[in-house]
Image 1 (cartoon, rainbow, N blue to C red):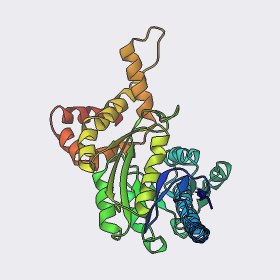
Image 2: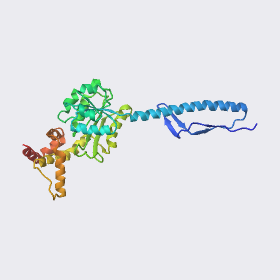
Image 3: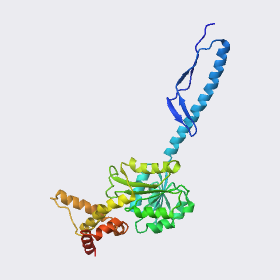
Image 4: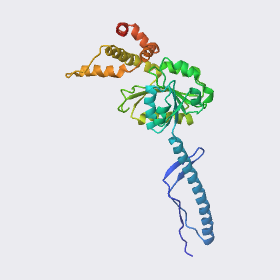
Length: 330
């Protein structure tokens, strides 16, 4: 009896190495088996093929389910709790919502109607917000009130791997507070969007976003949530800049603090646009516009909570600039 060739075609599946938590499988579209030598051998081979088909099918399904599960987990929106829902908190919240994440907010003022209109959820106090067990707690308070706020958070109501982040204009100060107050399992990410409601009103594309992953697990759910959180700003077009809190404060003292000082001085000169503005004058007007809406508390915080700014202001010509600012204001 002439021998016949047997070919077993598995269900179509991409050529790939599929990894699960315990095994690695190579799946090919088609598997070719040797020609049987007899009817008995043919039956034996057919049985082996059927058995192998079941194994391969199970392998493929298991691997597929693992991949789908990984994708689903990655795409699950974060639940981000914002503490401090003033102008800047609302500004950041809009970006979080644009990227499809859930926003839970609390603040001293009642923003329940605002949240309702913008697809967010408002809580009357921080205790109620923490009971929702958000993935990320984002502190958007003023520099001056940050310590009291962080110390008042009922940490015991949160998940043990919750990530804490801030958006303050100084970085060593909140980092040290987080490290002092939060239990070891909590993640810490210090961030500073180098823009605000005015400078970022036309989008965040190309604007710098500084961050340091102070304490985040190298792998696992916390690491994935941290990446997902930072990806929000990258997807919004921000220029992502990873640097230490010390380095940030050193650079900020030489740029942000001086910028706000000059901007505040200019705001008291009542500068107005003219029909014959020069490029330089346009720059001054823009500088004034970008800083005049910021509170004096922010300016004071930039000075008092950044040791580099303090040293700069105490030197020359820093002290002279600060003296002039004080005279103009008062």
